[in-house]
Image (cartoon, rainbow, N blue to C red; front, side, top):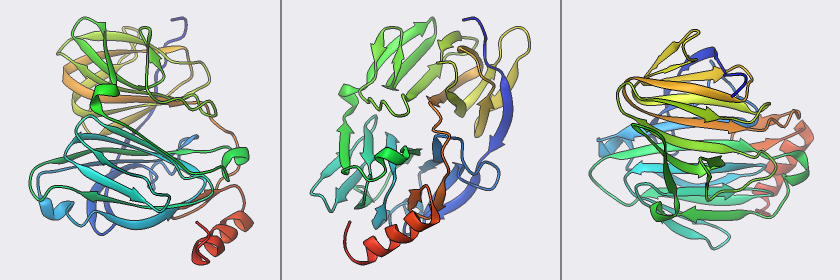
Amino acid sequence: MNTPRKVSQIIRGEATSDGAGVRLTRVIGGRALPDLDPFLLLDEFGTDRPEDYIAGFPDHPHRGFETVTYMIDGRMRHRDNHGNQGLLVPGAVQWMTAGRGIVHSEMPEQEHGRMRGFQLWVNLPAREKMTAPRYQEFGPERIASVEPAPGTRAKVIAGELAGIRGAIDQPATDPLYLDLELDEAAQVELPVPDGHTTFVYVYEGAAALGGVEGETVLEAGQLATLTDGDGLVLRAARASRLIVVAGRPLNEPVARYGPFVMNTRAELQQAFSDYQAGRF
C-alpha cells in the first residue's frame, strides 16, 4: 500500500420509509449525500418489529441501474415480471440488473423476528442502460469468507480480497463489496483500486480509519467517504461490523426520478411512457 485513504466526509443516514411503509435508514440518496458515483442509494433496514417491515415492497418498476440486496437477518421473497423468483435468507445476496425495465416485488416471508440488511443501487453506464434485465441470486454458501488479518473476518460479495473472488462480477463498475467483522483492537489493511469511489459504513461497534498518521473513528450508523489511494487501514475501536464498498465512477450525467435513472430528461420521460404502456 503506497497511499492509504483517509476520511473526507462523514454522513449519518436519515430515517425514512419506502415500499408499502417499510422503515429504513437512507445513507446514500438523501439530502446529505444524494449520490456517490457510481452509487445511487444505500438503505439499511434493521428492526425486530414486524409492523416496520411486514408490508414489504409490492410490485414496482426500475430502469437504468442495478440493485444489490444483502440480507443479514430475515427472509425476503423476490418475484419479477420476467419470471424470476427467489428467497433471500440470512447471508444471501441478490444482484438485479434492471436494464431496460423490470417490475418486481420484495416481500417478507416471516411474520415475526428480525429483518436486517442493506440495499445498494449501482448505476449503469449509458451504453448498458437499455440492456436486457438480469437476476442473480447467491445463497450464503456461495459467499466466500476469508481472514485477511488476525481477529478479522470478511465476506467477499464482489471484488477480490486475499486471493478470494466474490460471486459477483460487473466489468462496467468493477465493484468491491466486503462485509467485515473485527474483534476489538484488530487491524487490517485492505487494497482498494486507485480511482475507485470508496465508502465505509459501520453498522455495529466502532472502527477507526486512517492508520497511525491520523485516525478518524466511525461509530455505528456513520458512513465515511474516502480520499483516493490504493488501500485503507481499519482498526476496531470496539468489536465492530462494517461494509466496505468501492466502484469505478462512470463520470456521466445522471437524470433521476424515483425508480428510473437515465442520462437525460428525455430518456426519463420515455421510461415513464414505456412503463405506463406496459413495455417493461
